[in-house]
Amino acid sequence: MENLQGSMREIVKNLLNEQQVDLVIGYENGTIPLRTSPCFVTKEAEVQKLVWNSWCDLDLTKFLFKPENQNKKVGIIVKGCDARALVVCIAEKQIERNKTFIIGMPCPGILDRKKIEAAIAPKEILEAEVIEDQVIVKGKDFEQTLPKKDYLQTSCLACHYNNPPIYDVLVGGEPIELLTTEDWDAKLSEFEAKSPEERWAYFTTLLRDCIKCYACRNACPLCYCKECFVDQTQPQWVGKTIDLSDIMFYHIMRAFHVAGRCIGCGACTRACPMNIDLRLLSKKLERIVKERYNFEAGLNPEEPPAMGTHKVDDPQEFVTEGN
Amino acid sequence: MTTAEKDSQGEELKTWEPRILAFLCNWCSYAGADLAGISRIQYPPNIRVVRVPCSGRINPFYLIKSLQAGWDGVLVSGCHPGDCHYISGNLVARRRFAILKDIIEFMGIDPGRLNFSWVSAAEGEKFSKVVKEVVEKVKKLGPIEKLIKV
Image (cartoon, rainbow over all chains, first blue to last red; front, side):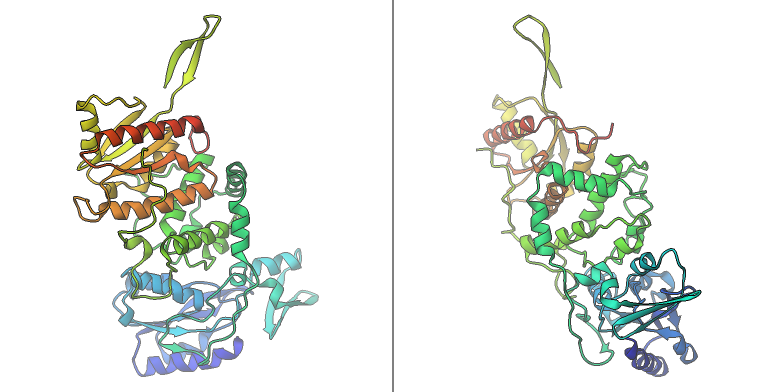
């Protein structure tokens, strides 16, 4: 993965020199190990800041919505999942395709710093390096090697599109092989077979920890509304307390708002300070839309979004006939 | 809603009756309910009607918020597919409703609390049957406990 960094920089340099773009959004090293920060490159001299490594977990699509980037031609570095988020935004007419230059990165999976930190705890990691399949973490008086495959992001394990479905240039030129280990179909079916009481108990136990900080909303590349329903006060849809009822209300409506749009990038789960894993719900959303409307979000910018269109013969087995 | 009944010893018993909030489209189901009324067709008195311009006007928040506020069930009724006054509002509503229902079912709330039907302005009889069916269904489920804010 790190071997693509050089060619990525080369591509960005050429884009800026040929004035094809005004700005490139990419990643730079973070101020602490195991992290990267978003990086905004406008000059050739700054290109050396750009990095591409196993810590590039942030979805940069979010930055295309910044007012200062609105009237520019922007180049953006995207992984498979980021590109799908971008496709959804383009299909929903929020981002103009011709103002965006998509630099696609084939992605072998991003590492989960929380998992690594937990494995090393209580020692503090001061330096980390990824060499092929090994992660080498170093700190004061210790050095440890971990196998990369055990510390991937949980969302990467369930990934089906590690190569961007759309791009203007694919760095490295070749798509790479997919690693999928988790079978979510089976997990979902198993969960659906449980009784309503068991399912309710699962979700209430899972979400009871929620502090309603809305980090999941903020991190989601598809939550671009200028005013979110949670912030509305006229009317105030969501109660401001952490009463279980208010928490469940928020999560039902959040799920509803990303239904048919969620691409399972796991940004919500990564952002959660309480470590709540929302993937079961997001995978279910994918399944609902697939089964009902044969639609998969984030693959084709020309296709109208599932919740923005309708057909006369949509399934309606739930309709009360009053017989 | 409670009505007083007496058991064999003459003691008062409270029997529970469901409360159901019905969102009816102005152009069809509301007129259908009206027709049921002027035709003197009997249906259970458990529903309260909110008139909306179109089933597509119903924000899904209304439905979940109703359950949170303690309504035992919700009924949404609009024009038959193809008959929408605004051409496709009911088809939009159908997709939204389907997704919302699937989500709450997955999370363990009984989907029978959310009901959806097509009733035209000429179907007073059907309206009464739909209300009967929904009231029966919600009665079996019992008072709402899961999402209610106390």
